[in-house]
Length: 220
Image (tube, rainbow, N blue to C red; front, side, top):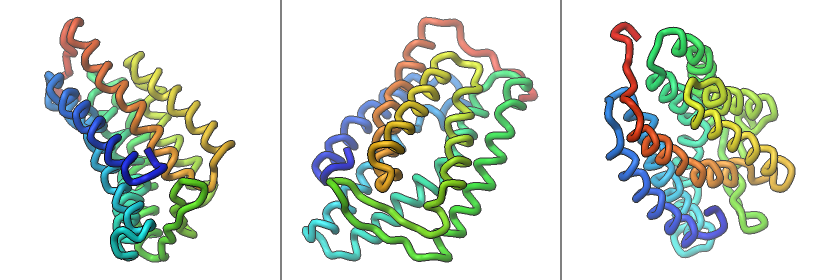
């Protein structure tokens, strides 16, 4: 979905539909944030469509930068905190939540650091090889990338739900492919891939429909 404006807008529409359907499956308020992920990715891909329109000179050039800043704000500044937090919330017991808490804390600290980097240093947005490259001297580093993966994929891999573990494995597989093939456009390609496989979140909730409802501890 990162190859053109039309691809982003089409993908956004499909993900938006799936996102609404996912939210309709929610049975408990603590699952709302995690269920909202496909819809958030839909908005995310919609924003990147405007980055393309600015790069292609269909809209003024500043649109590419401003929309790119909004895209990176979510991809790098918010997602590493929101994803582990959403998994933390849907874990039904205190023991499973304690396991998630470390990823939430890591994601929160990383998000604060990235937000500082995005405000303190300029963001460069450009097109290369039919993909968009987002570069910031603070946030586009190997250390940040490794911590980012630990916070996001780690929360899924250590979840108590098997379907979410599968989602984490799929994310890791996509990450390795992106790093090998198109590392220069990592943020754009990775987010597009994550958006596509976020469809698995819908099937997680759809699958839960045939199972007994999750019982949350009162103090969790």
